[in-house]
Image 1 (tube, rainbow, N blue to C red):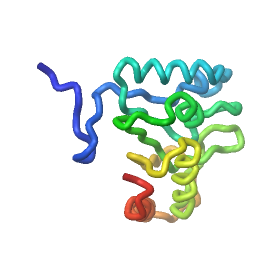
Image 2: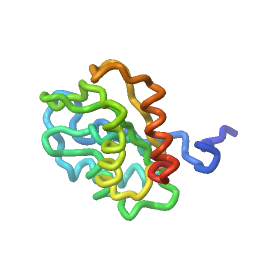
Image 3: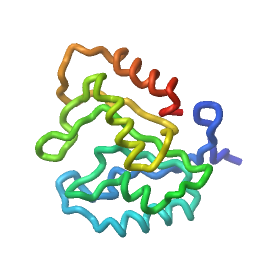
Length: 158
């Protein structure tokens, strides 16, 4: 029999099938936004079907419809076994698309924004997304991880 769960970080058990929130707000990057109620219904159904891991990002959204807000509306107060992972690094450009890379000194701001919009005191998992975007330049990947490690030490990231 195949194991349908795995350990994340040694202390979180998640189901192998998670839910990616990238398309909650819109079906395509440049398509029309979806009604927020649709995303709320999809999220609730995903948990009914056994999903306990949601992958999101503060930049997942368009036209005033944002994945993190839909997640909070649909699922808060959150089930104890729900693991929410988010990404930081990308910044939205003037066209509303993630096209710029945050400097290390902006990462705290992005983590705190995700905490606020999700209604959490601590994020279970934070991915650093890099590449394919322009940035202020000169900063190393190590500098970015150093900021995230500091946020983990403060208890903002599990």
